[in-house]
Amino acid sequence: MELLKQRILRDGSVKPGNVLKVDSFLNHQMDIGLINEIGKEFKRLFSDIPVTKILTIEASGIGIACITAQYFNVPVVFAKKAQSINLDGDMYTTKVESFTHKRVYDVIISRKYLNPDDHVLLIDDFLANGASLLGLIDIVKKSGATLEGAGIVIEKGFQPGGRIIRDMGVRLESLAIIESMSEDSLTFRE
Ligand code: 5GP
View 1: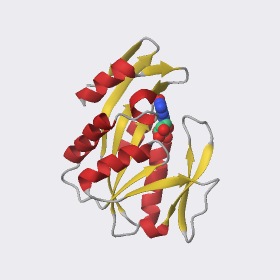
View 2: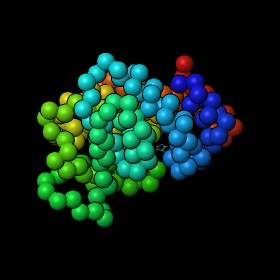
View 3: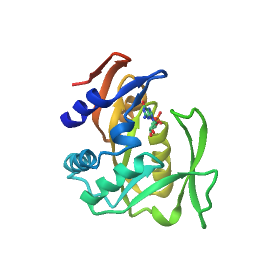
């Protein structure tokens, strides 16, 4: 997605530890005009699948998922990181190792909001090692719902997540795939 790539080149910055900062437009301050275009693009890419729910993980996936959901007319469910919350009833749970915070979280979703009739589209801001998506995929499997695909805003193609998820046969669409990055250069996969 050209608009997104141009924005990454203009406003993104690369930090030590292979972290791309896009805080000024994607996951701290949010450029809603851009995210609206991102939502439209996900709708275009997944227009042929029957989505009943969009699933993401807190926190930075939520805003993107919500705007995208307006184009699919479906609810958003977000997986919660478990320490400080209390959901009633039964939960699906899984473990996710956070790329940015370098720790393992228990992640939960209430059984009320995902069931075998659902057709699920996963949405997240970044794909790096794949732990977040693998956690969400595990929860979809546990629920008996159908996984229809995954939409990622920025995939770091030099990290293994994309290959792992595609090798599982999951339909994965990333709007920008970074081939390589360093403090003074960044290239995209064509
Ligand atoms: P993964 O689970 O695929 O290793 O990492 C995905 C999660 O880590 C994303 O949800 C995102 O929040 C965070 N993340 C991974 N890489 C980056 C990065 O380069 N920049 C930012 N801002 N977040 C990242």
